Image 1 (tube, rainbow, N blue to C red):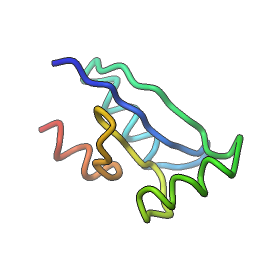
Image 2 (image 1 turned 90 degrees about the vertical axis):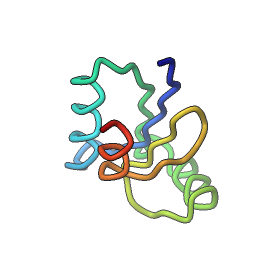
Image 3 (image 1 turned 45 degrees about the horizontal axis):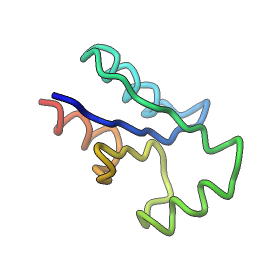
Image 4 (image 1 turned 120 degrees about the vertical axis):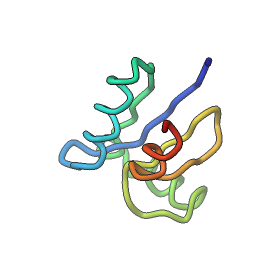
Length: 75
C-alpha cells in the first residue's frame, strides 16, 4: 500500500513521538514538519483542520486526526 504520510509535530509532544514510533514500527515512511520552526505553518494548519493540537496527521492529503485516529486507521 503506497501512502503519502505527513505529520505535524513539536519536539516535546508525547503523542507526536508515539505516532512517529507507530509509523516506524509499521515500516511506513513519513514526512515530519515541526511547527515550532515556523508558527505561520501552525496558523495555516489551524485554519485547514480547526485543530489546535499536535500531532496532526495527513495520509494521501486527507486529514485523519492525531495519534488515536492514526492508531485506528492502521489497525
